[in-house]
Image (cartoon, rainbow, N blue to C red; front, side, top):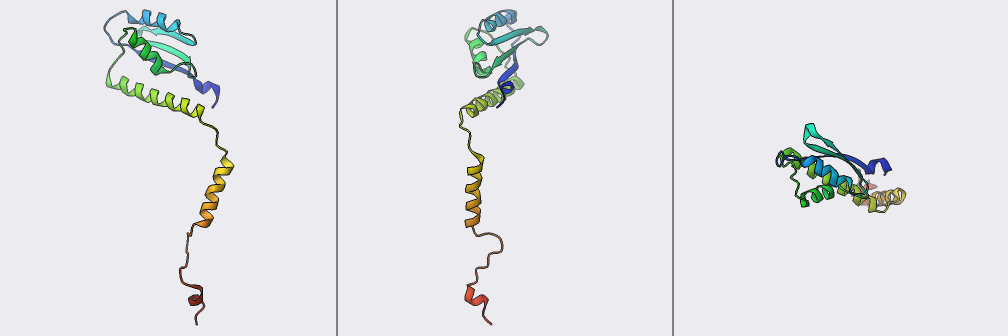
Amino acid sequence: MPVHDLYKRREILFARFPPGQLPEAVDHLQQLEGVEAAPRLEKRAVQVAYDLRQHTLQGLETQLQDKGFHLDNTLMSKLMRALIYYVEETQLHNLEAPARPLKHSQEAYVQAWERHPHGDHDETPPEWREYK
């Protein structure tokens, strides 16, 4: 997996109330090592950039919620959040998975195919095929 696939840019959306959360959230996120944060006032969001090997969106949002920040809880935000959590979790899982040699796995399928009766297999006994 290329390294640039592990560098993520996301937006964390905040609820309308309480007002004034963005500057404090940006300050908190910028204190974390390896996290860049910038306010997006027009969207009530904070744009974050991080390396997936150090942080996940779920981890960052959990830290914010533990500090008392209120995230946007609309259905669309929840769906997007769940999708991103799943994708990042899968990427991290795949980083830990050992690479499988493709050649050996193909050989297993070829051997299984050769042993499996397929196609127009004639089950007629050989002595009956030649009967005249």
